[in-house]
Length: 196
Image 1: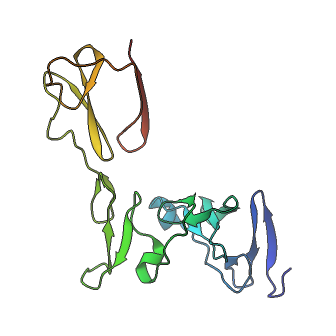
Image 2: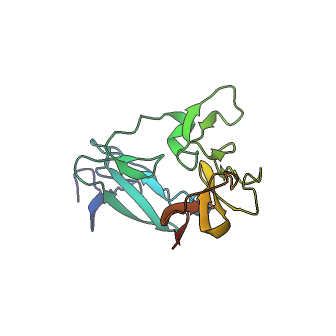
Image 3: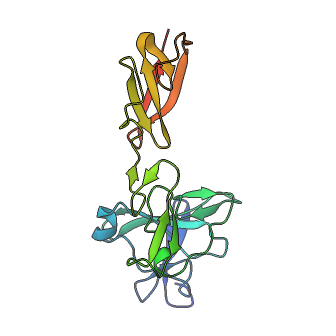
């Protein structure tokens, strides 16, 4: 029991206080409401920062009203928009941007001119009001000579005749690539190609 009447709950890589108000925090002075609502889970929002001096504690929803609290490794800070621990502290947000509505690493900026009260500056390869859509660079059919186009966030790759990798399958003599890895096809599906 801490001095504000909260109950300390030990976790594998952290702890939290369950405060008399039902809020969660590292103490009962700076807290958040349990964010693991069905609405947040269905909207694919499951990571939330827990207020801490070092900005290095976060909560991950495991199901409705259930969560685990974790601490970033030493010298790392929780970055809510990136949903990962990073070297740099995340910029402080206010108002609607506190809820981090932008997806895929988009940066939330408050905007009085917007009906939603914010706009999202999307990372390359994403579009939409909340950066929710990956741009499909294959829609323009850039691969010629029956090449197969594989889109990923920020670009595309053409798989050409005889398993050759190129940007258009139109350059005449091409070089065969031995290993091509880390192509992300349709958001997060990992594809690995090996050519002889």
